[in-house]
Image 1 (cartoon, rainbow, N blue to C red):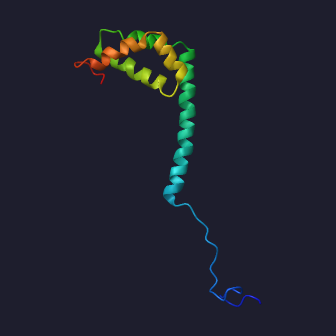
Image 2: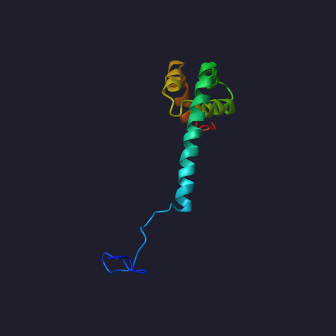
Image 3: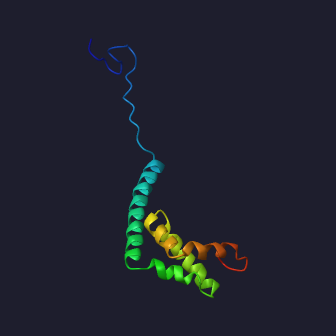
Amino acid sequence: QACRGSQSARAGRPFAPPRVRVPSAGARARARARAGGAKMADDRILLQDAIAEAGGVRPLVTLLASDSPVVRASAAGALRGLVAHHLPNCAEVAQAGGVGLLVPLLSDEAGPVR
């Protein structure tokens, strides 16, 4: 039996086109953000590697012992970025004595690091 007009030849029901899921604008934006996030993560890792290879971790750890609370806070913030999701840099901070210098900063009520 051949198709007639808008009727389905097999079931005698109106023809319904197959459903195709078209991603919403929000879903497309989320997909682009995930792709961009992966690129940013790759860039961050390259930057973390480059700073470590240039010997930048140990001087930052040394700055954690500064007399200036602003310098200590800045060094702690920079180290935070260097160790985020980067185990080799975490190990280097620990080997340089950074953990022992960071802990007192957390309990310093007057300091800007909290």
